[in-house]
Image (cartoon, rainbow, N blue to C red):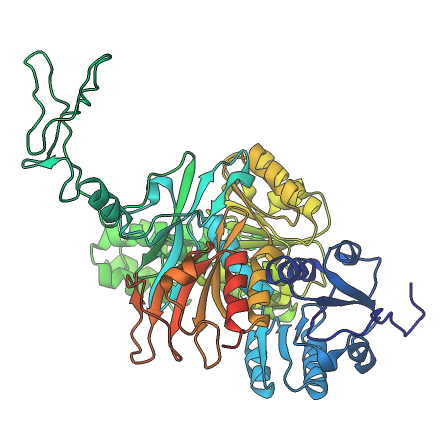
Length: 640
């Protein structure tokens, strides 16, 4: 431990290193990315070595030093040699603290690359303009689409130039797939999954056929293979070879082996390995959740009634409305004039109807008999009832300030998604689902959670309280929900929420945020109709790539594995200059899926020219594993 206000500087001077400020899960994953895949020296600055993930970070082989300072001050930055560092990642603390630290770091080292975490993305974009070489990223914004898509049971997508890339599995894979991104998929053992397995080139089958069936190959007219040549008999003085230009004789008892030549499919992949596979596909438009406007309107009306009224007021309103409708039907039946019936009913509701006089009844000029008078009396009384009920609603909503409090879901909430935990990620996921038109109900135990005000502004119901999950889920109408997403910061809490949800509704889909990979493996083996994601696992590769200067457009999940979609720019002095598609893909872990050349702004999908070399100004879009993108980023910063 260090004395108050002081940190532990690195043991020896260090330079050309990367600094990670934070001791949370994202910092842990980011350090692993930098050390294992980019193989760069890393110095970590934490507030307390004994808390959060700091002890695990200290155990990572390759970390140059772990420095402890209670606050991210100028002194702390000098202690980690900010003047000689190549990059700085700020992944912990508030937006304000990260902005202040980023500006201070730029003052010490104007050329340093700065990547900082910002929940307020709009503010982050504005701060980027103040930095010479900086990028603002949001870990929750990076991971939220994967959680939302998993809850809805549909693929997450990344938009590239009007096309939406997503991962398809097994039978959902179409013939126009871009490339196979994973094989050996086994839910019982996710460690067998291979991302971007080795595959043959586009022309591999043509080359193989040319070698086997060349000019002198055994192909005859009609597409039949020649009969196999007989083996020489023992003791024979002949080699068994026929004279050149003659076909071997085939006796009547021996049928020649006949095999039709198979025409190669230019778009075919090599034979698929055992186990499930996943492929990258593109859609022209983003897949939307098919929720009809009738269902949305019904949910909105019922939810609005639940918000404006309590149970007793709703009973009074419904009884009065039913009485008015019955009386209206009686008036229309007696008079057979719909327009006049509407007219007299509205007057009665407003209390403006003129009662019959005895003289009118005696003269036969009354309003139409006993039943009509009864109907008008019922409408008038109900009209008088509506006025105080409306006043009570106004007093309850405006006078008591109920609009400023979270509300429980309505009795009509159906087919909704329950989001457990309103931290940064939970708030992002709930907002995204709401914008898609999916009914959402949130659960939160901490009444001071920052996400409560955000979802309250959207009108999303929130179940507050620290009671048992069983009771909280019941209040969130678990029986009628379609999915439960557990997004708290604790793995055990998330797993408890998922198990309680499955116990209360065996058919509900559960999506759980889990950091530990072993924990996630047991989760997949135990539960069906379930998914697990890790925020740090999804976000850390994007932070690491941004720290190295490349642009990650999005992340796609293959169960617990991550596929990165990145766009790389070939700049003067870049190590990518002169490389072709074969050079980029040959070591593995990278697939070039599109290219945009300097002379044209058009993006070429499935660019087949493997010999065309990259020049300054070209841009390529790749699908890559973490190690594959790390290799490209290492080449990107090399000088020719």
